Image 1 (cartoon, rainbow, N blue to C red):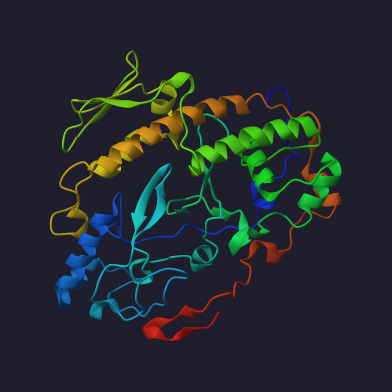
Image 2 (spheres, rainbow, N blue to C red):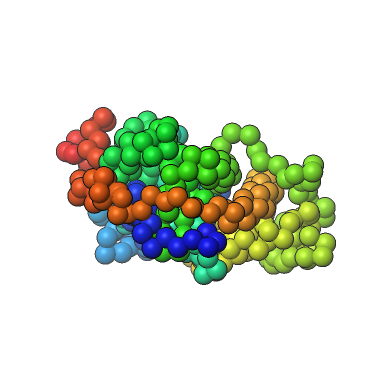
Length: 386
């Protein structure tokens, strides 16, 4: 924020104290850009027997077909050992496989090395999962999604500690202190929106006591949250512009490139435009989002493995997802430029939060809440004790 230093700004890790490492699959095949592929992979797995099934599974130290594992909280999947499993594939669920890349996952605990059950217990339509993504050119990007993130190395910070949007994952007393300083009590989403707009290098979040500036920052942050979560009405480019397929995409495109003069995205001989430069240039961690998204859909798995099972062509749903992603990235690039306009001139520093007793947070605030609302099935159908 130009002209202002914020050495005393509190870190996001103190404002949203509970965090969890992202789930670690341990094998790539239980996730894919389309659900039909996952069901075909599952069918191939359960049709194989003995050593063939074990080889297809791709065992690790954490998981083998003989591991005794309970059911995922709120998820599908059986609890018998996978070596004996049969029947249909558990219904795949949407996850965030990479920044801005929504894919599908087989929600079966037996397939996942480290599922992080505490995240699954609080995953619902009210939840917002936040991941800090580094940016070499400036402040980190706080990625927010309704989908469970499956990528690291940053930690996942749920906005709510309990299902149903209950108990915000904020430093206890923070909302009360902000209410006094701002003259109105913000909600948990307001604090997250401000953090998205105001976060600085080092994941520091300068807080303002200026009500008008707070409102501007929250408005910009809420816009970014809406674009990242993609809930509600579909976003549209201003001026009636809208990306279209101008030349048909081939059945299985292999390359992607960008023509800046024409604002066109080329998938082999296929062409999509207009694609604003902000969408093509949008990077997370030094990687272009559109290139990474395309690579995930054209990568060929090693022959004889389950990852080799993939769509025969380019599904129409991928084209629809690509057009929406282009719009989201273009609009988000514009919003991020406006973040730079925020200049915090009346700050609430870490020292003030310590004096008010908001910081340091208690150790319990950094641990998951006790969630005992539903029964969870343990290995071989036993009742799991929480």
